[in-house]
Image 1 (tube, rainbow over the protein chains, first blue to last red):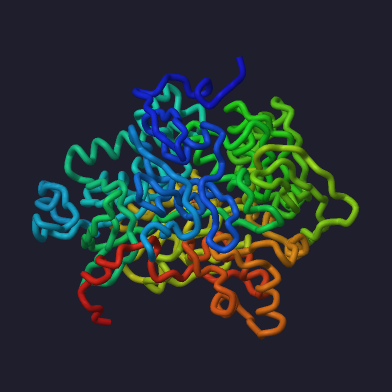
Image 2: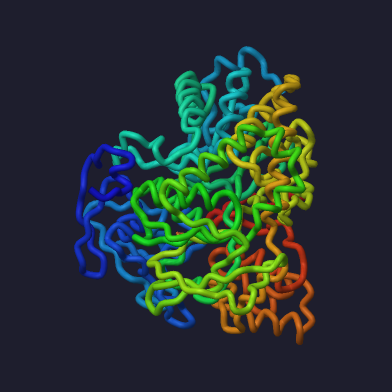
Length: 104
Length: 480
Ligand code: FES
């Protein structure tokens, strides 16, 4: 059996639940951040930059680089590495400033 | 600063709010990493009433970052070195909390500390709702730790290129990996720990690419020999790499990452003494992720905002100038751990204890002072060995983004320096917007300073985290 983070630490999550990312269903383990759920599904980019539309995802992993900004349940500019995933969350790729829909 | 016996019986203080004013606690500790946690439990053990504020949801800081209880990890210690040191302090924290001697406020991001008569007022943003929290304390201990130093290179903004500390943090807290085949690169002892834990968690690590030469330690043999524990630690990491067939390339750097939507390979080149890539030595290593970082930099905004004096540490970064009892230059403000120069968790734990004793007016036992001096000497030797060489800027291309947030390429920064006469990072920032984005220069600061030809200046950010405007509007007018 190949090694995984879970085989290293043992045990299992108290719950798993589903969240949606750009229409795709992903499984989250209780206690994971949104960035962790995305990484777990092999997704590394969930935002495009304002200037050049370049793809970005988590970089610092601890809330200080702001590269992992994402729209969660309609709220833009959330740091995916800090925001805990909750059952039924809808996560969408954030383009540019994330304010397109707000008209600012 | 001993407090009276009657104070000890009083219920623990809390952030002021609708409940109204309570007596100011003796000590506010900012940061619940190794230094802050050790300080808080030591101070409480000596009879002080303590408030411990931390931006994270669980104590431990970045070093002892661990999965949320919901993830149900049976062996969180498998991801850590020295977990017992944390576990015992966490148990002490819970006991002191129970007894009302420590008020522990997780998810509280302190963004400013201001003098308030004989005491201090701390302002924080609390919880996901970003509520305003304000509290007073008679002394403050800043244990705000450090963040990772990043040096840009072509392709470093590609998805799949992640901070070495970031990969470690995501693994420790979320039990996830950025890829299956992960190159680990940069400089500093953290790389060995990161490579070891990524591999233990199932990643293939084709190489650890270290820009420094470990021969840099040779000039510091006495500091090394006085720290046998540290040498043993290094040997543990080294043998873990050997066991997992991980290649360690010293005096090498990743000079480019390749891919379109995500990283597919990296170019690795040999470096000369100044970290300049040696022509003709480049080769490609296929991978689906790169974990990269060039050591750690003290996080000083709160301290510099208060006017605390800084010094230049051996790795070139600014650190707080502290006396033997962890006092900053501002009376009533103390600091411990990485803020005084990056030195690792053992030193942070020790300094937290020393600071707490000093705040409580207790003498610092000679044994503690001696251990601190030895570990500090070791940290300085390490810092000197891994200090970035000036030649690293040779691997930048004109179109390599230096500032990730504002997408400012190296060419524009060089133009500001060469044509517009910018001599320091501040002027570069004003001319190019480098460092003006979301992260406020945390990622690009050291690189911009290098391109401007100066040593990095101590962090100066008016706010240490994003603060809702309504909180600023509610502040009483400053009286000084
Ligand atoms: S990854 Fe840096 S803020 Fe989330």
